[in-house]
Amino acid sequence: MNTRLGQVKLPPMMEIITAEQLMEYLGDYILDAKPKEISEIQRLNYEQNMSDAMAILHKLQTGLDVNVKFTGVRVFEYTPECIVFDLLDIPLYHGWLVDPQVADIVKAVGNCSYNQLVEKIISCKQSDNSELVSEGFVAEQFLNNTATQLTYHGLCELTSAVQEGELCVFFRNNHFSTMTKYKGQLYLLVTDQGFLTEEKVVWESLHNVDGDGNFCDSEFHLRPPSDPETVYRGQQDQIDQDYLMALSLQQEQQNQEINWEQIPEGISDLELAKKLQEEEDRRASQYYQEQEQAAAQVQQVQGAPSVASGRQSGSNERKRKEPREKEREKEKNSCVLL
Image (tube, rainbow, N blue to C red; front, side, top):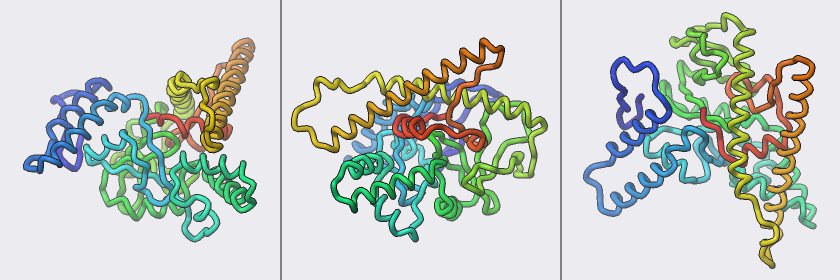
């Protein structure tokens, strides 16, 4: 496993590695990669970063919190989870950008991160200022129209920013994917369960925002799946697993719910709006879960297989769309790392 600083070396002939073993190797690498001949201040800073990274390293098995900004493919709001990418010197990209030529959207979104933009929309909706209300509407329309979390401007910027042959991480729709660039074209590593037996399907091209990529082998030669129906069923299984993971992370968030009886007096309108929005999202998510459970029971009675609805990753993304409320909930909470 290569990084820019060196390698994580696995024992010879090892074909399978558990998540726990991989975390140990990454932890050892971070410890061994400590820079030599640095000042005392730099050493203390690095040791603090290393301590923070070790504390959240286990989250690589479930999900990391990252919060995009819409101004650049490498621009994220700083979170402790970003330290892991920094220490391993692994580039992290996204393609959810505002087109700078669309002035009203540029003004509405500004330098906000995703979370800040959601808060701004809530605040603008409650404002008596018609200009702010209009700005909030433009921002909300931008989020709705770019629900795939990739824009064509972002795709162009990605293609320009990623170096030829570079191995990096691409964040989209609450998933992290391995990405590289070959002969000027971006490719994502295929990891969906449906391709488990497709030995010649290794990469999928990323050349549009709709997710309709071309499958390639390890040498980037076109290789369509041998059995599309089997692949599709496997993809649905992957969707179910992704959804269950998202629900698990969501449940952790709900365990930290607000005690409404303890809301302090004098709380600002924005803070109160945020709390109300969180409660609304929680109730919406609970409603959809109940609907899905009821639908599953009906399907079982009718002898039909039960398939849970969930967010797609990679090549699955074009197969199904989710209600906006659920999508926002998962975007705000932890990101599933597969």
